[in-house]
Image (tube, one colour):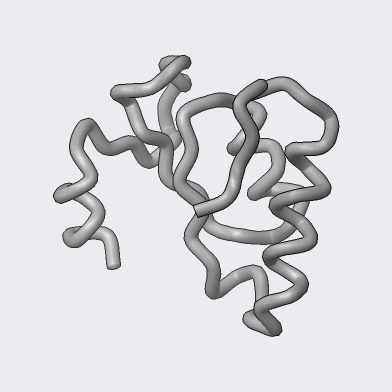
Length: 77
């Protein structure tokens, strides 16, 4: 798990991008889970898949894939 306490901090991009690149895994094989539109924007920029956690800070418009409980993720992988 990676992140920062301020959902809008500019360094959030850098923290996630650094982790993605350090894994050596192609970004399209990585699933990022977040609760803000900023999280979704980061995933899109990196080329990663994204699932919105609906129990978090923001409600995102459809067609964003959303889950209300982390158990729902099992049906997506």
